[in-house]
Image (cartoon, rainbow, N blue to C red):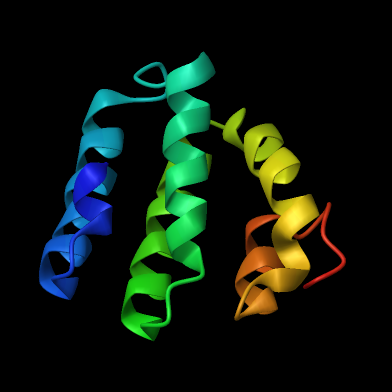
Length: 104
C-alpha cells in the first residue's frame, strides 16, 4: 500500500494491478475489518490523483475489491460521501456507489 505514494507512476500502476490480482486469487475473505477499511481508504485517496491513468487504475482496483467483497460498499460509502464533492472526477465516485451517490 505504501508504494501508492511513490513518485513513479509506473510503480503506482503496478501496485494496482498486483493488488487486483491478489484479490482475485485470494477471494473475499482476504480482507475484512480494519484491514479492509485501511485499503479502501488508501485507494480512495489516490482515486483523486491528478494523473487520469492512475485514477482509472485505482478505480478498476476498487471495482475488483467490491466485486470480491461486497461489504466494501459500506466502507466506501462511509468514506466517499463526506469527501465526494471534492474529487476531481465525480463520475468515478458515482460509478463506485451508483445506488448511494448523488454524483453519478
